[in-house]
Length: 323
Length: 182
Image 1 (cartoon, rainbow over the protein chains, first blue to last red):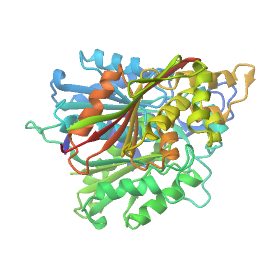
Image 2: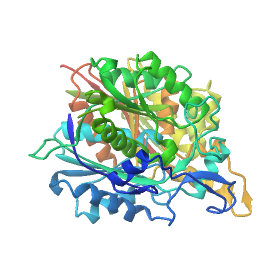
Image 3: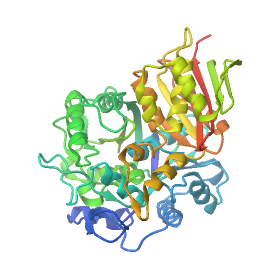
Image 4: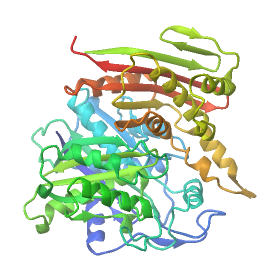
C-alpha cells in the first residue's frame, strides 16, 4: 500500500485538479472538430490545447502543481514518466529533463505499455516504494497529439469524427486528447493527510492479438480478479473503465466486468470529456475517478474504486484505490 | 532467492546461448530470418513484424525451447530508444507529397508490441511490461525490485533488453529468472 500525497491535471478543460473536476461536473467537454491542425490528415474530433504545448515544460508545470501540497525528499524520489510518443518520439530524454529540472539525480523510468501506461506506471511506483528502493514516486503522464498519431489512428479506422459515445450501441470510435497529469505517491504518510491509498495493482496480457482486444476479455478479467483479491464486488463504489468508444474495446470491457461479477457497479467513463489522452489517461482518469467517488454521496459510504485500462500489444492493467 | 536459469544474447554478428556461441551463416537482419527458419519456421506472422519484434521474438523462441525451461509468469522488457526505427519507417509513409499512412507499420510504433508478440506465441497471460531506461543495469534493478516483493507464488520472469535503433543494428539480452526456496 502506498499513499497519494499530491496530484494535478492540466488539460484543455483547465489547469489543476479542481478546475478539471468542476468542468466534468458542469458537463463541459474539451472535444472539438479540427480541419487544419495537422497537414494531410482527414478532419477529426479531439480535445487539444488551443495553444500547442511543449512536452517537457507542460510536464514540469504539472509536477510543480502536484508538489505544491506535499513535501518530499529528492534523494529518495524517483520520477516515472508515462507516455506513448513523448517529446517528438523521444521518450527517455524528456524524462531526464523533467527529473533534472527538479534537481533530482536518480535515473528516471519511462513506462511504455501502450494505453495502459498510466496505470502500469502507478503499479511500478508501488513496487519501487514497497521494495524500499525509494520513498517517493512522482508519476507524470503526458501525451501531445501530432500528425504522426492522428494519421495512424485514422489509418486504423479507430477514430470517430464526432464526439465519442462509449458503450453506446451505435458508437463509432474514439477521439484523441492532450493532457498532463501527475500523482505523487509516498511509502509512508509522514504526518501528511493522504488523498487516498493505492492498495493493489495487476497487469495481464490477453495473449490473443496485438491490435484487437480479446473477445472474452481475458487479460482484463484476470486484472479485475487480482485487484479484487478478497474484496466483494458490492464493496466497490465505482469502476473507472477505459471506455474508448471503439466497438471492440467497450464490448471486451463489458464481458470482463461481467465475468468478474462487477457488471452492476457504477462506471466512470471520461473519454467524452478529455478524449483518449494516451500516456496521461491512466493518471488523469485515476485522479478524477478517485476524487469524484470519494467526495460524492452517491458512493453510499463505500471507500474503494477500481481503475482499468487496455491497450495495443494485448496488455491490460488495473489498480484498486481506497480512501 | 533468485537464479538466472537461461540466457541468450544476440548481436548482428553473434548468438550466444547460455554462454555457448551458436554458429550462423548470415549477419544482421538476414541472420534473424535464418534463426527464425531454424528455430520456429511455422509462424508466418514473423514476416509482418518490425525488427524490434523479430529480435525479441527470436530470442524468446530460442530460450523458451531450451529443455526444462520454466514457463514465465511475467515478460518484462526494456530499451533506450523505444520504437524509433519503426517510427522512422512509419514517418516515411506520411511524408509530404507521399501521404499514405500504413496501419500495418503504425501498430509497431509502440515498443511493448514485442512483449505482446511473445505473449501470443507462448500463450502467456501473465504480466507484460515494457520500459524505456538508461541501461540494461537499470532493467536488472527493476526486475530485482519486482521479484523481491513477491513471496508466493514464486514468479519466473522473462527479462529482456531489446534494442533496435537502425537497420542491421540491434542487441538483445534475454534471461529466464526464477524464484527458488533453496
